[in-house]
Image (tube, rainbow over all chains, first blue to last red; front, side, top):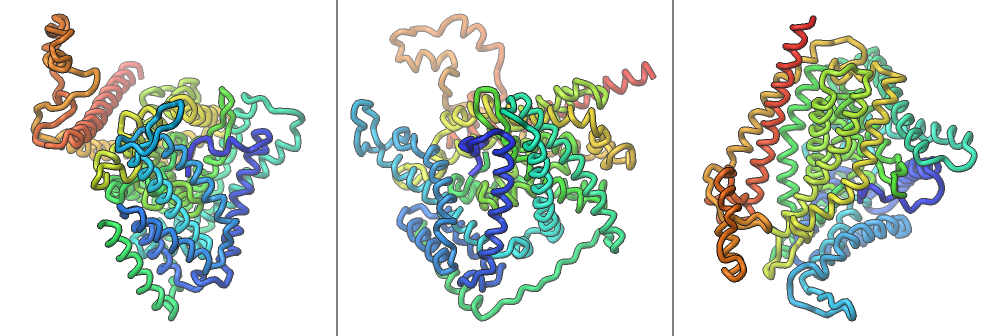
Length: 280
Length: 352
């Protein structure tokens, strides 16, 4: 979703907001790991099959030039969420966030895009262009569908497995290893950052001035930077003492099962027909 | 901002992956050479660091909040190549696991933030910081400027990607299929927020952290030169020489992209003297202002009116001119850093 100011809505002071943002990230990933162990349909498939299929669906949504096909792909996404027992209340914030973000961007296009006029806004006299409406709907729907597939993937698959599965789409082993380590350090650092802010929060009475908040943020980033460098040296020494000589090996425990052999042709048919009809 | 999926056409996404690949390749080759085995934990930890600092929302003057991308900080502390890799990894994790930025758009987001943002920061920092001491005030100012320019350059690149979508990707009626706004709307809309708000978040964090490190952990500020803090492994410093060659090749290729150069097409406010008369239908402006005619001959731009003749599409010509412009900027940067390097070397020789 991005947007440099999308947490602005949070109440409370700077420290509290940052603690909340850090905690939310932790919670979200723990929740995803929990769901990934649930017994839905997608949870039983090989991560490689899921990754490639989700990528295929996203490409399908991106490549489609016609609205009904994008709607059909959206139905597939909803269906997958239901059979994988992903509760809608956990998808809702994602959808609303994307809707607000894309809506803000796409909204003005309704009036600004040249094309046949559908209606006129009373008093203002702005022309609603039919092409503009179509473009706005396409943009919003496509971004919603794509993010739904990526959320479905990470909510039905343990994250470490998603990373290992990336090798099938050509991500080099070294990058997969770095991704895996990064993922672990993210939680370690989330914890340290959150501890630092909490320690500060418990010592602050009243409201921190903006200038102080900025200084605090820079100092915290600086401390984190020093800590991360120390950490990387420690980890390096630990790796070296355990025999790391620059070569990386990953355990490849993936095996295609019966479910995968059923899922692959179904996904293939949906993706190919989606791309085929989307272009007509 | 991180581009979500659905805003760029699949072909743009593929092109951006293709554009990022040589940088990833050179970055990993160079890091392998310089940091050897240390790189695995170092890059992972710094990628995690880049990820975390995107979550710090700091209050900005004017009552809004914003967060930094950390691309400039990574470029200054780690050096540009290690920064390309660790910021890219942070972006991949954000896209895949946190839905921040699209999956197909990973190539585009890495290109704008981890490549354009990082290199703009690196060069801006080098030019402003010059040969000043590691603990000087000038380094802090350089870091702030680098941060501000870095995120604005990334935003500009993103705006261009958005702006070219309606030129190429429309349905049979001409309705845009992806990001709907042309360049003349996309660029100002994107830049206002970044010049006014997001740029300052990056400025504050980058300058603030460099200032903090100067006081508290100055050894970290020599990683970019040496690969490890405080002194060890100094041979890496010369690493830039070979990278300069890659830049030279890229810049030359960019500049040479379109070979034939004669104009067609007019940008608003950039009319030539004859066009000004023709445009007006000869009603109020009956003859070209003589001042305009007088000055028109002085400067002949190498690619007049941004369009290149052998390409029938005016829009494509626009893009190609943009590509050439980027090439020229890189060349200018190379020449100026080369000259600056010569001058400092001469100064060092004259006062040892």
